[in-house]
Length: 336
Image (tube, rainbow, N blue to C red; front, top):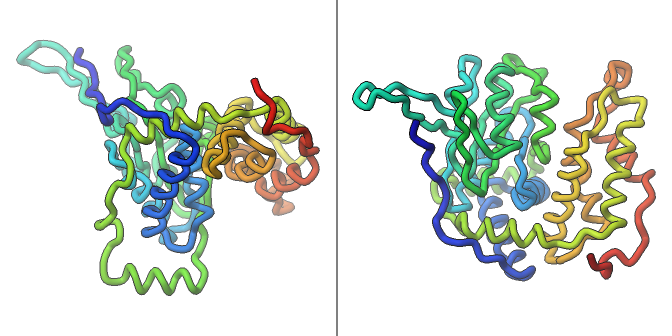
């Protein structure tokens, strides 16, 4: 059985300094904002997710730019990109690939699916059945695909950017808890304000900005950014602060399911990425607070009573941030 092809650029990654990292990320952000006008906070969360080596879930009503955000971020980096349109009749093998019998060689050959790319854009992921959605579980967590007993590694960097419609809309399936928990962050775009929408009409009415978008970084550069983020210092107080926030979600009476230990790891990684985005080589409590809602809110499951009372997980995380003691030590000067 033949192996899957290798994806990504062949150049060796070079770890940049804090200033160079900040400059590269700002170029990517400016590129994405050419397409997604007036949403710098959404772009920030997307970039933090990329730097945290995670996956992004974009949830909102149709027409606000979910797919445009995903495609703009993918095209801003010169690496392999694939797009999957999730539909009710999509099969798991349509994503991961399938083994096909070759009569000439009298052996099975693996035909890789669209998941074998550096950036995988999953459009309307919750329109496929849970069986098909589960095809991404191994890919997102272990960066590999197993088909017919054979395991094929995915090339780095690897990121899934999925869009979904609110579950109240016709023809959607709720994402299973295990699937949601594998997304590092969830972001909602929302409607643009009057000024941003007017600018969008002026700039985008005559042409598609995605068609003119050019890469401003490549896969090797992104690999270097990821290595730089891994070196961002996280003090003992910041780690404890993240653990206390996640633990507190498991004690809320409004929740049927609190945040998992995976959430803690993702929260710390996202805080590292947020610090790097700000041009720092160490984390502070503000970094944890800046990413807590995107990282934690979508993982929490409300009780039926809390849903009836119209509580939201975003509101609960915000309350936890206001109640959990913030470390006051000199965390930025602590060394390993």
